[in-house]
Image (cartoon, rainbow over all chains, first blue to last red; front, side, top):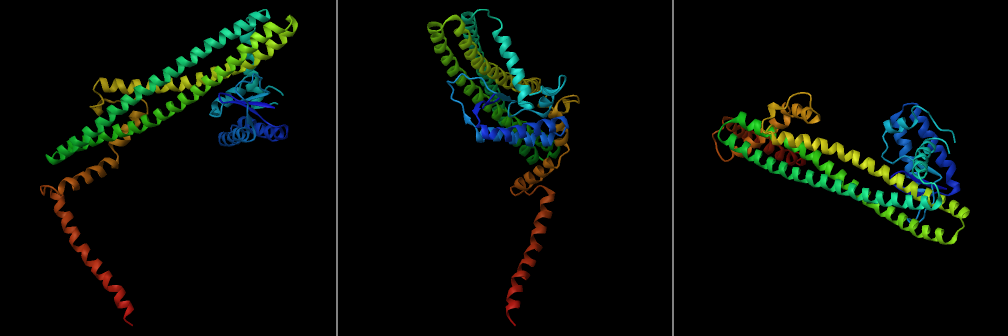
Length: 92
Length: 271
């Protein structure tokens, strides 16, 4: 699966690592919805580290679109909340 | 995948389709997309130049402040040597403000350097994608039938479009941060230009954290401590300051307990 960390780049993440990534993603959303900034920051940092750690950077001359895109690593809690405000979460 | 990534993907994909919807037939999509890529690359270059300009400006300001710190320190010493403690205190307060400002400038310059690196990396990545797109564009034009070409074009355009949207986002974030710093740098420079940096009492309420820091510092013990240090330093040269006499007296009794302590262990060893 190709995962992009916005403003950073694309990583190829093995299928075996996808469930763990989904788990972290859901935790980050839950923390965000609960208004728990500390927990959001912790979880989101772990998520980004997970992608950087488990993923292989996609070569620059490949032109494939990403399967999923995560917000930038330096996203603030306010920005993350804004992603969900109004329309709420977009289902899968 | 739902969640953060789902939302983010949707936002980016909406941007891409907006980007590509403009053209109607495949070859037009190709040319339009390519033209947009080149424009974006130019913008990234401009953005990098912007960040570099801001950084240079902050570095200039930093140098001025360093000079000011040295100058104010000298002035404080001169005032103290002339017996004008109030003046010395004022000079030290100003020096403290300048030092605080220096620290903040340091970290801002560091941030700008990071942004410059990040944008340069983005530029290189985008350049590689554009190059790839360009060669694929020629292949598609030459080798595929209209129906096939449409599919291939849409794939390639989506890939490069995502990179474009992402570079656009990176640039926007970097420039937002730079704007904030510029605004602050402008405020400081205005203060300097108006001479208000020389006269701290003119910095009234309603300003940013510089003012808060100013107020904290002017009443702070840092200035007292530095003044005391300076007095001791200067005092060793001239005996005119009254407090120094007391310091000399205090030193004398201190040698007696030290002698008593030395005697201690030898007594303990005797039995």
